[in-house]
Image (tube, rainbow over all chains, first blue to last red; front, side, top):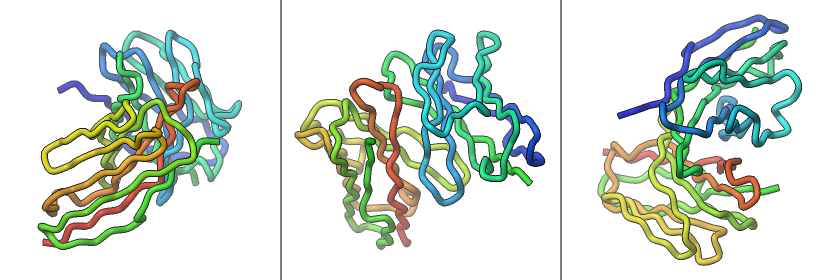
Length: 113
Length: 112
């Protein structure tokens, strides 16, 4: 069964460093998303991406964040200068014709020290 | 701002019991999804409900979307230890149809 994959599973970085989180969505899906979940808190929407551009973003998704679909399979989230409060699980998701049925990857645990 | 509330926050029951968890909002959603999340893993989609009043069944799980499309419930019959996990509801709006808002979740523990 097709699934969303994410790498790395765990990333440790120092404050101020740039990180790139990678995702491979389900191959025939057209909509791509990033969410984050701070430990013990709820899943929070960051951004949605369709037709090679951002379609929605939340107030969390500030200028420090960017997304890219560099080729036909990968979808990346870049955080330019990480802060301690960026420590969280970051989930990638994708959906096809049924836009609201989003399929999530296993997540990348980002730890900023 | 659209918000989803879930109740109860925590639920611990014996194997074989029935339970219902609730998802409520003051906002109207175009659709509502239920997910289950295990610790350290991503949410897994269980069901999507779209039509007000809709009822969907998935084995021992019954999902209902409120007539006004503001609330939903998940009923589990004869709970099993394998049902243990965090149950999340998530709603999509009408204009920002791909911006899905998650509730805080109901943590279910089924004791053998």
